[in-house]
Image (tube, rainbow, N blue to C red):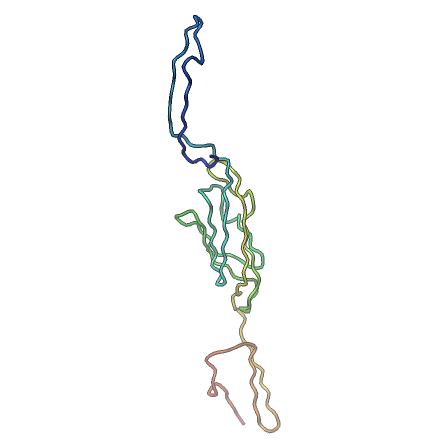
Length: 171
């Protein structure tokens, strides 16, 4: 194998396959031992990003050299990216903007940005989803009052908590 997994190795030297200087044939030798293979398998990453912006990065095996700076976000930002006890990383992603609108966001882990414990370079991965931005834009209202006294109020976005008692009329 090439993953570093332990496997049984049997070694046999047949009788008579060697001699000493006097020509005496050698005796049989046998040995069995469980030993790890040489790990030449690259670790892989899996990036998942759901529609609510929940990000999770997992690895196929224990890795080293990976940190939050290895995560690239296009079309948004990630916050709270932290390593979990199982070696995975989790965080929260929001789209660029400030209106609450959906935006295309891609989160990537680059090839060779981490290694496994044997020093094999890691393989990157990415995930994309439409994620909402954080709405920090205050709503605005436009009022129109025609000559017949008809009032029309239009808001720039859906509002809550507004009713007729909020309208003050004087004169």
